[in-house]
Amino acid sequence: MSSLALTLTLPSLVSVRSTKLGRSVSNGGRNWSGLTNLSEKSKSKRGNGLCCKAELSELAPVVSATYGVLLLGGGLFAYRKSGSKGSLFGGLTGSVLMASAYYLTQSPETRVLGDTIGLGAAFLFSSVFGFRLASSRKPVPAGPLLLLSIGMLSFFVMAYMHDSLPVVSIPDPLPLP
Image 1 (cartoon, rainbow, N blue to C red):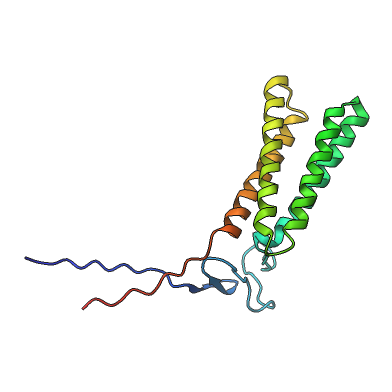
Image 2: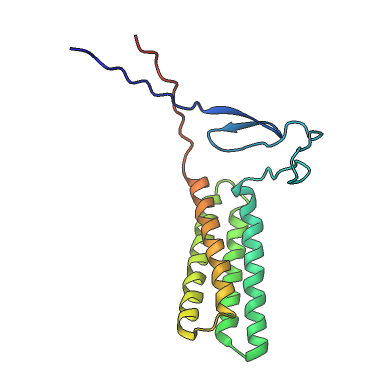
């Protein structure tokens, strides 16, 4: 009988990546730090070599505040233009939900709850604008608002998964005899 040995190489918890822009350090698949030396410039035509170093959890308050302001502004605009009380109520409800998501995503202890509220509100408004687009067959204003709400829904799904799933440390494999 012969025995077959299978060796799996698994990534360690901390990895270092060298790119044209510099060295980046990853901690469990998160926290890519970008450039190590800001004087290094990209030799490509894409720009000056600077990159965004923000995580989803850092962007969630800004995104929720922006989405809330857009919902409030849209509701007020629709009420002023056509007297729609439903749009006013929807805009106020969306802005209150996004304000609470903004407040809760500020703290690491309540970040997951804030992501959940943002996810639920984005799902609610995606559904509302989807039904409105299907019933009216008019692309404006439901079409762009549906695309915006789907974008916010995908952002809050990613932020929720990023904040709620624990980082799993994978031990180094043992050498086979």
